[in-house]
Image 1 (cartoon, rainbow, N blue to C red):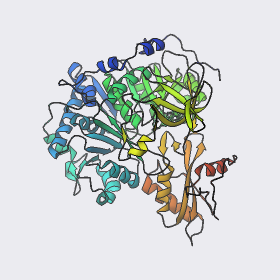
Image 2: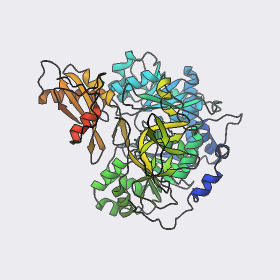
Image 3: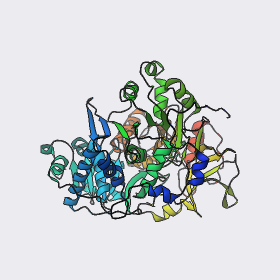
Image 4: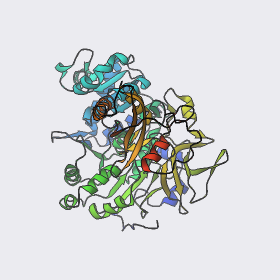
Length: 579
Ligand code: 6R9
């Protein structure tokens, strides 16, 4: 528990050299004043990310795209301004209004990044979906978000969107990348529209509280939740990226996250751009050889990745890191799942640096807790709250939730009001309100704080599954399985896994007349993969004859999990297990 990894003298003065002092000096007014602000007042994320540096450093590379085929495409800040002004012009031409939702469904291609920032520049709300999603998660999210515009590729459109298009009444415009002459009926060519568009002259006059970004996250019950963020989030995107990722202007920064996940937007787009830092964007999927090669060849100095990827690199062995030059790496950080102490130590051996854990959520919009560059690392700890952020561990005392003393476990809560805090769950006011108690935002994570103020992750307070950092709502998987005629009932849990942390496991009661055999298993697996996509579909299906349920009919996933792990079943007073 008391292990400490001591850090040598830093190569560069850390951006947050003196934590205590930064906390004492902190004020939101000062943080806000660091932004350029719109010429006529107001605040716009795209203006801070693009226009600000397009004026002061037009030829600097904003994004270096490593394309699937091996080509390298640099996009300068001037190029980014031109592209985003044109994209905003396209939206203008289509009659898209402030607050309307623009979705993207694409891999990490330049058009996705241009669409994100062009949408923000126009004052519309941007939402990116994982290209790995199947039609069902796409449909639910676009329905909740009432997406009016969708930017996607011809292949993704044909495979995933065309089959559900008639169930998306709000979707008016589908803009396809690539060859303008290969657009199926009912779609428009983004390539042609961008060519013909009149670039808009200025960013929309948005204000701090105007909606900007929409990210979906999964809950235990019901549909996915659409967490809405406002333009004011940029205050925290910029500051937290600089502090927690130790970003300096001369850095070459690589965030491996896809913009379908909040990390890929807050720290794959807005954080680095608003700090004037060049980002590497790799279009390819995870591959140990290529990842090490990218770190070496692109001379990456700051790297933000995830525990699952690190565990896969650990598995790939030490020969690979030994064969490359990683001497330029200065800061490595991780997010999304607990970072095992072993991975932190492995970093020292393989990369020459310990890994810095950071903690945050879709709802928090940005990093709130981090191991700081200037501090020694206690492997296993998430770190401390960044200046400006106040956390508490709330423990149950009878019916009340009260701040607990050091060492005691409880629910991690954050004092509400930081600028990147989500402003709504779209169309679900009551669900949003339930996340707050007095002035605290309740995170749904269990944690404890030690006497030195370091926060340690304990677990989740709910049944949400964390598979490779991707949150999967068991309800969404259960619903999809139950639509298959071969499944009568389904209960879904996260099963511990050495690499992915958890994998999705489903317990299924076969429909009457269906045998619980390999044929049915294969059918259900294929069906789930097709509907949900590989990131969400179960990895394992077990047939059962009953499912534990509460008297009110809810599947007792906790019990399924306890049985799976051979653990005590705990309180089963509400159990009603019909057989
Ligand atoms: C950015 C992001 C949030 C949930 C969060 C927690 C888990 C994230 C973690 C961590 C342990 C860390 N999580 N960081 N658990 N240690 N450093 O991950 O957003 O997809 O909304 O997930 O992920 O359970 O509540 P999101």
